[in-house]
Length: 453
Image (cartoon, rainbow, N blue to C red; front, side):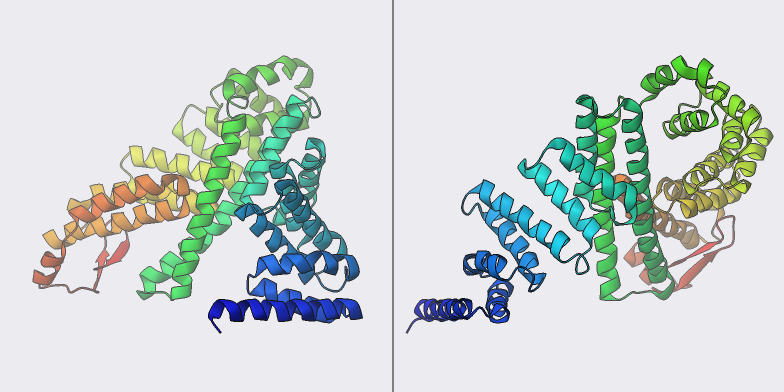
């Protein structure tokens, strides 16, 4: 008996066993046979058993619907059967998990998946899909982390706006809330990467699982960067300064005593760096009169004409409880000012503070890398140490690309350039004062060390 014949015989035996269990009304046996097929990825056979299980044993186990989801995904991916039937089957499996086994699954994440699949396969109405995602986002944003769900949510919000079902203000609110959520998730992922990279530098190595974690988080950041580009691309032109300013200018005279309205205007203008506009200046001053806060302090710092005045207002904004995104912007702006004056030590402190406030912000690391590389001649006692500074510069450039997917390509090229200036293997071998694995400490403004590769 050849292998194919043996396999077919086994399938026949399993099918007969399932049929007997079906006749006896034994749901547990039916589920066990079905699950074995699904686990073995014998989806075609499991598919034959699925409808009977759903019809006769709907509440036996969440596994029926979880495996069912995999089965219909397989059929859609392999283009088996009628696409519309498989799509509806997938929706039924998701609904089964949500409605019948809410304690066995993450309902919010499943609802996001459900709405996204409905949108993908054209099931249900546009408004129905939008409201499902809107409900999850407003009630349980912590579980709204699926990149595909985020893109779908905003595409639907834009369609609802074009259909006159939501107004422009609501579309802006959705944009603000979603981009803020994306940045939060990016920061969470970037912080994990940064901690593991620091551990690797300090201890010399990390576990295989930790290396895999870095790789996975970098993939996550890449996906969220795609989402951010998509969302910005969808609303970018509509939300730019030349669109925002006329939108708010027309209401300024009647709204200049409305604290909430002024706060929203400032938040959006600051978010798009429209801080040179006269409307921004008028809004900051009007809100500062009504209710001084970190927002008004930050705004006044932006329009201040002297460095000392800028720093005074920006520091006040931080002390008054500025959010992390704004803190990051403040520290970065201060870093830029110090860097421009050649005060690299102060600039580095501000750049690090900018990243600490917003871990997915990689630009500060690139700035630090550039300052370190430019200080090679003043930060080493010997020619070898002077060139070794470039290893440290490369390390900061690597960090920039790891925590900020939008800088990945540029950061990698920059790091490679710095490593090209550092001592090569033959030079390390010939160096008398140091060996591979030794640490060089730089006591100049850098105040950091690097391990010789």
